Image 1 (cartoon, rainbow, N blue to C red):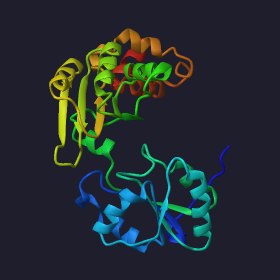
Image 2: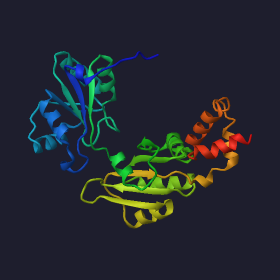
Image 3: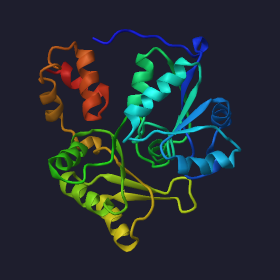
Length: 283
């Protein structure tokens, strides 16, 4: 069992800052992010060449460390050594919030395990930015990253969309978007789809509609740029009373008190707790 750890920025000496950077518009850089990069002793960047453009724009001149998926284990040891010497390090990715489909997990985990403070400097994130403007339900959602390109992993990923009772957010390459939409169309009932493209950039756009409508649109307007794909939940009326009652007998749910059972079923099926509870009272 993991041990309890408590870290506090107030107690910190050297610190690893996880700094979000713009996803397309340099004006989205926060004052706090700029200040943090100015004060850090070192900056760990996914691609130092890309990050130099951002740093130059804000007049930041700090020593850089390349930290990417091919060298993260090695660079982690270097950063731990710097922290032990009392030198704070800022981690940035090419764009957006580090660790969200970007390197950094190994580093953050080992820095925390070593007892150092990891401090998030929040900011842009394309999945969240897209979801906020999509018009799809946001009270609960699942983020799935990029779908596997082929094989059983891809089939399972597509099937997961049919089983998730709330909005799903994913990333996709413009070259594979059409195939992914066709796969979704074949696996789930008609759902509302929203494809966000080039968030915060000059050609930002949102295309919403049923799967077939969105497919038709992109057949005429080939997709380009960075894409966030969102799939809305199944309509509540698709969840029958029989399905709710059947789930009430599932292992791990059947033994719960009525209120907790209703809450768990409602969460899994994307229906209201009151509807589930009223059905359970009739059993």
